[in-house]
Length: 210
Image 1 (cartoon, rainbow, N blue to C red):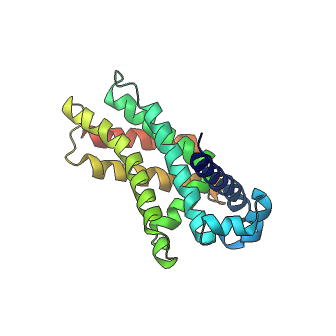
Image 2 (image 1 turned 90 degrees about the vertical axis):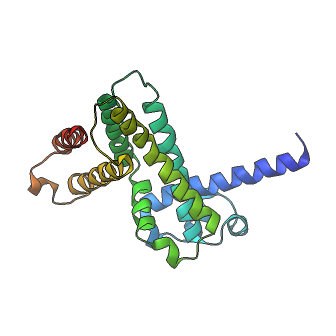
Image 3 (image 1 turned 60 degrees about the horizontal axis):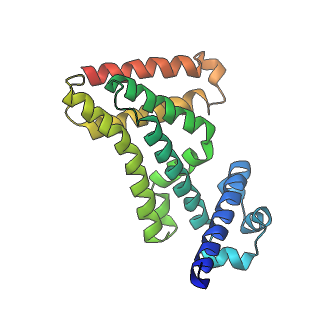
């Protein structure tokens, strides 16, 4: 390996080291309470190295999201790889995988909520980073869109706009997760997450069938 390639590999490894450490700190302390010093201590690299790779905490925060969306996209692709399954089964698998990921990696979903609120426009994030996050988000969505399109082609689903239906499915799942897993009054609601998830899945499939 040439000196140049070794240098590039080293930079990528340092970048990932910082992002991985920051993800854990953000999960533990939240965005507002996390400082560059926290990231420095958690990552084991110098502050100068952090600022070599990132302009500030805001850029690190969204870089964590880009890694999370890439992981989600790859897991969705793996989950939906078996196209011998029926479109209804594949929609169910997509829904289950998304919900599993969102509960297991709550930190990524919290950052995504911030990002979609217009947060990135307030912090002058690098354009290429914003474009990367948008691209990865659409790639996640399009994994399900392709399944809905397959269902339409096979005459199983009767909706007209696969992309809109997928966005609605994503939004409903996100809302249900917040109401039943991130809500301190969950016990007051009297509805478990599994009950909510199964009912919502059936509703989504019924909507797609029309």
